[in-house]
Image (tube, rainbow, N blue to C red):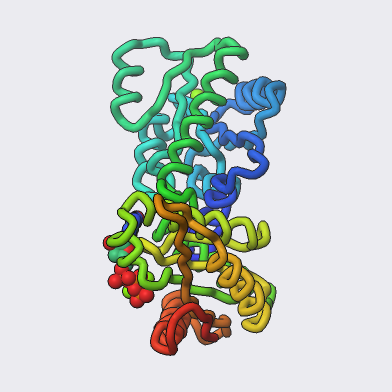
Length: 312
Ligand code: GH3
Ligand code: MG
Ligand code: MG
Ligand code: MG
Ligand code: MG
């Protein structure tokens, strides 16, 4: 049901959520057939600064998930034609909503029903009439944990950069955005030179330190709208929306020079390291794979030409 573009929009929001800048407001989708109950729940949530959308027809749930992109679903149990458990099962069939927290809010306090609802994909069960303080506390803590989990899943643990999969998804949404507003976009593939010998000479922990220092430098130097990912071991992808290849070259070349000047301390002094990079500018004929392939080919040329340089 989610088109490529919609999926990319979801990913873009998830990545934004994970970019540890301003935490966006909590967003809750309320699935509740009673308009009065829905309005009351929304009022309670808004008192805690939580944004919400209420739908009364369970069949609208997927559309609402895609367009509103909530962090959590508050689910009624009894609705005309289906139960909340059935709606949750439908939600869980879609990979992008596999881990979205679902909290039940039902007038039925039957324990067996509650256990069943939790077993079948629910995260929590609250009964009506609800305590507003408890409701808001449950919603916020579930969302906090969900965001922490996503952040961990989408980032590389050594560097905190986007991981391989997230980098590719981020590139896809950057291309979609460039297509929509007719702007340019550049991608750079960056690979540390002779990194194997860094490990061999100074040890793996020092290798990790070099990887982290380049990660930190790249992240420091790009704009907020750019993205940096750890594509593989000592290989990085830099996504520069709106940049022409000359601008990407200028930026990356400054970073290249500055990285090569970093002195990594070792017992008997210090050593330095350098990287090569390949830059490719996007055009409308290129999908993300073709664009990455171009950057990778340019990187290969930079390596062949002697390393410690960039190639467009
Ligand atoms: P080139 O200039 O051609 O890129 O040579 P290279 O030695 O950098 O390339 P190669 O691909 O042969 O070696 C990359 C090395 O990076 C091999 C691997 O052990 C190491 N590596 C990969 N991931 C990590 C990591 O997380 N930490 C450390 N310390 N080393 C890593
Ligand atoms: Mg109901
Ligand atoms: Mg290398
Ligand atoms: Mg290599
Ligand atoms: Mg490599």
